Image (cartoon, rainbow, N blue to C red; front, side, top):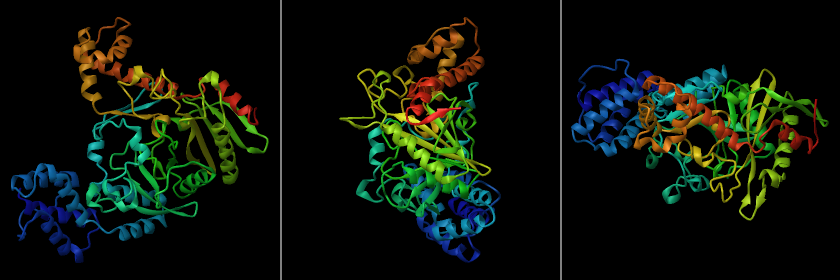
Length: 486
């Protein structure tokens, strides 16, 4: 199939899936021809026949490189530019979203997600290939084949600043249509949170159903305070079928971008939302807010009620109490010469009229024994997960590096053979724990055993992140600042 034939299909695709208006068809087609360096057009080949954008762009890459129009190295930029030329504008995107939002928040988000997939901004066909399973302990484990392993917390502090300073970081709204980062297919929709201008976009390599981020239109550093809790509740008021949360605004326990205020959320029910209460508590000033020490692997407190203001005020009280809490015996240092170490990761879901605000207590202090973090994945688990344990993992969905797919397949062969190969020696912990029973494994049953072992290790990593190792210790912290058990 020639490039001209694929251009015809792409224009047909844009008419069917990207809202390309008939009046704009010639203009968009000419823009695509210009991007490809084609100086004429012949209406030849079969029309669009239901192919996905990913399929069509794969064909375009194959034909374009074969015809010498662009190199394989430039293919990603070229295909991004082609799709960007076929899409509706950011203003039209906002208008189409707002029109649907008047009738249904579900319909609006579903439309916008599907549009982002059709535009090939969300790489859904790649995401669907990521291995994913739920372990017996309830945790969800995925292996991300699409993104490289992220190990540098200093990049998070800088917010993944861009060369030349424009855009200021990787999630600024100025990225919309920016060719320097292959963001020509990025579209965002406008939000109002806390009376401020924010926007929503979907993650191109999302970790869960309809994974997106809400971003402040102003490039301002991440922070958590009372207004943060109110903004999170503003969002779920508008989109009650989604959850929304915020990473702790500190390296090692936060996300990959700390220099720009943003939240993460989407349409999947993560494991922490199903965690039960281990100890029920109340605060005398807010008797209508149910307070729970969660039966969870990390340290988490949940506030439940219908009064937004009460939830926000009490959440802020827990946060500030935690920021000032020190316990040398437990290694909890709130602040020292290296800076502030304690923070919370809040996340909210709405159930009927009730808000469920979950506060995960975090601390990023380091020590000589644990230079990557006392309350971080300990060194014996780094072969599985060394990256920051951010909001999503803290809620029970672990995103493991893509290298593990091949490495764990090799380990399965070792387990089936009954001998650890040289290439799998760094996985000695997994091998020993799986084989200690003396059971005989095939490669298939070894793979199943590895998955359960991964679930166990992820649970132990969350235990590492727990600032309090027992529910009683968490309750004692809350009692020390005015809460009481019921």
